[in-house]
Length: 343
Image: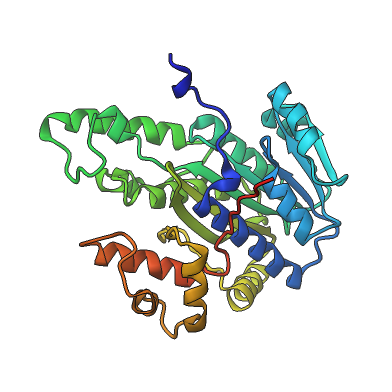
């Protein structure tokens, strides 16, 4: 194997759509803080070598206690070098080990299960978090959301129909996925496991439905999980994030839903499509040029396109350029700034 194809740590801190997803998570936690203090919460995450989410969380919530688990010993050493504050505890353990032996059940937690894959292992870990989390704990699950049928059936990414001679393989693929997604006593709606939901445009919706079903089935009454937000995005690999909070009764669920929708604009229900994040790559000069017309009265992308006077994706890209500029109008406050320092 060529060294050019070896996989290392993805540079999450330099991926624009991931950056928006991360800032939206901070916004959600700030919204929670208006409802309940985060003084007792413990943040649990998979920090990776850069600990980017830990850095941002520390800036927003300086007193928040945080724990990162990492199985790779050399990466753990790198984490110690890159750590942002003394509030972070870096553990050289598998997340599964932490979940089974160290996950706190006597205080609320904020857990970001930021996975890079989607397999039975990750789904079992999601179930384990849901079983142990206390009321007012927040759970955010990020999974790879690329439909498996394209690789297994050797389909093109833009292929919209399954060839008749591969339908038996498709049925086997769907059965394998259903078996993988059946964690514990979860009872998924059989109607979601149809070929249409395995086509890439709808697969993140299917995955969000599966995750919410696993979490719900892992909660012992009266504890329930209230989904608040879900997004899908790609910086080279399609990902899906779904976030919610645990509570103990219907009245509290109603109050939480109302609070997050009114104070932060966060609302999501099982079966809905995760909101897309697909921001355009703009220069600083372009963004400054757009400032005088922000925010537009209606988020359609037309205002930004008219202000710029050109299509950002080139000739014949009106539809794509409009969609991306609509995304800029929606997420302009979360849009990342990447800079270059020349010594």
